[in-house]
Length: 197
Image (cartoon, rainbow, N blue to C red; front, top):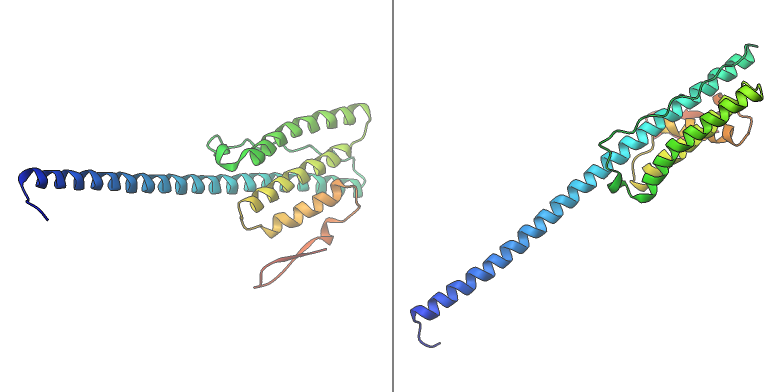
């Protein structure tokens, strides 16, 4: 093993210190990366959940407009449906974490809402069709529901059966299929809910 002297001893200590420093730096870097990644995933998950709930609430408002217009029509009154205002997305939504596809679809839906408003206003004024607003509302509500469904599936969020029923009904109405709202119902007791047509 040779002679141990102060030079050998200090060289050994310095080498061990440098190696220890490198290992500590590596471990701290890995811990910080993992912590930041977890924080980003939590932020994205929360943003996805918020976005899905906002879109589902808009879907319910669209469904309410259609139901009221149908009730007015059945009772012989002139329906005066109004397309609900599009929800304002919270400024703290983590769009980057949601991904470019979902972000683009969510922002495009707001533009689609403006296009639907313009088209519905034109049709109501120049074509004297009072039910066109309800028709446009069904298309808009169906698009909002499909996007909410996509967000929930992308982030593996649990689907709310009430919104699923409303969304399926709006899809049928948007496709021009005559279907009563009451034909879509939620079945279930203590078991998980299922949707029946």
